[in-house]
Amino acid sequence: MATTPRPALGWTLHGDGKTLAPGAVVLPDERLSWPRTVGIGLQHVVAMFGATFLVPVLTGFPPSTTLFFSAIGTIGFLLITGNRLPSYLGSSFAFIAPIMAAKAGGTDLGTAIGGILATGLLLTVVGLIVHFTGGGWIDAVMPPIVTGTIVALIGLNLAPAAYNNFKVQSGTAIITLAAIILASVLFKGMLGRLSILVGVIVGYVAAVLQGQVDFSEVGKAAWFGLPTFHAPRFDLGVMGLFLPVVLVLIAENVGHVKSVAAMTGRSFDKLTGRALLADGVATSLAGLGGGSGTTTYAENIGVMAATRVYSTAAYWVAAIGALALSLFPKFGALIATVPAGVLGGAGTMLYGMIGILGARIWVQNRVDFSNPVNLTTAAVPLIIGIADFTWVWGDLQFAGIALGTAAALVIFHGMRSISRLTGAHQEPATPASVPAGSELVH
Image 1 (cartoon, rainbow, N blue to C red):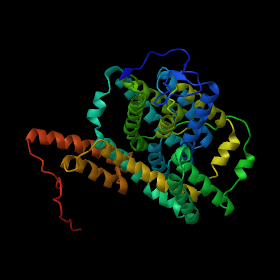
Image 2: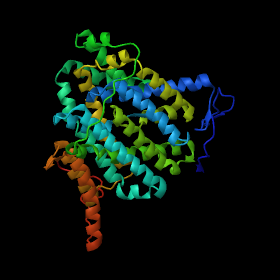
Image 3: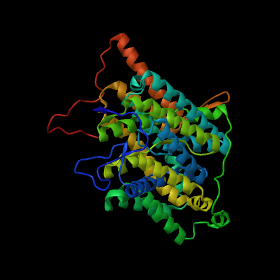
Image 4: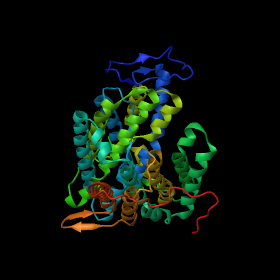
């Protein structure tokens, strides 16, 4: 696999800038003609739109502010990675659970923002360490069984939040959920990948027809202006809710780097530290001003895979387009009118998808659950996360995500260490295979 070239000013025009030969790809330091590049960049804006706005709507954050810092974060990401790694930084789903848990505990928006800032600063430090030492230790500390478990428990921890919105307007929620499910199988290409956005639009229209949407704030909002900024506040009792998110952001960024490498045939390993650093800086900036934490986006991987265009020029277009949208307060106010029923339907699918993404990590890495270490590493933290176990220690409060994350790390490394010291042979927890013709009785 070829290594990434050193950064250059501008981009080399790929071929004639109009067509792609069969099997060819537009590499990060190349571009198509500017009209085509702008078109692909706007596709990225659409791809990230649904999720980037859904997170602030679900958590009560200002949508325009979140979009503003998403755009600024993407520009920073491109600069810090030397314009060599294509990525858009949108709202991270991993922050939904701690934000909602913090708000449920009676804290204000500023305290939740402080948690985002602390998470960003810690990720920045991790990025610096990886940049100077390499990322081998990440795989050792967080193997797939641990990473998959943490991602799964974050999604499943949000199940009550989905239900709370769902039951407020159950009819609208069912319409939204049904539209998402149908869009994923009825449409091909871009619409199929944007099934959540399609479902939210259908659900929103249904809510409008039922008189469930209040447009009063939209009329009051200005057409042009800066987003509303909020200062962070720090509360040690809330920090334990947010810091485990760092592990998810590490996994997402490392996965993004590996995905781009696989699709382009180039090695981006040397940029892993920079990618983590860039996302840490972007999340820190969001925490300073009131935006939601950021991460790399699977939706944009989908756009790149479909178009075979990996040019960072398209991401500059996407970032500038998102920045322009964030300067329309009326647009942000319109997004904020999404009612509870739509959020309940979308959340039911979205949170479940996050949980299953954790299982997907296990499957892709062929995690062996006949091994008691792996089985226990997944089993105990998932129950802790789903039931939202809580431990209060003085002014500190650790809820299901923090405790589940800690449990996954302690159980995996603890059981492995003890097994190695004792030399005990671990019997498979389940049969490796079932003889042909036999039946399992349930």
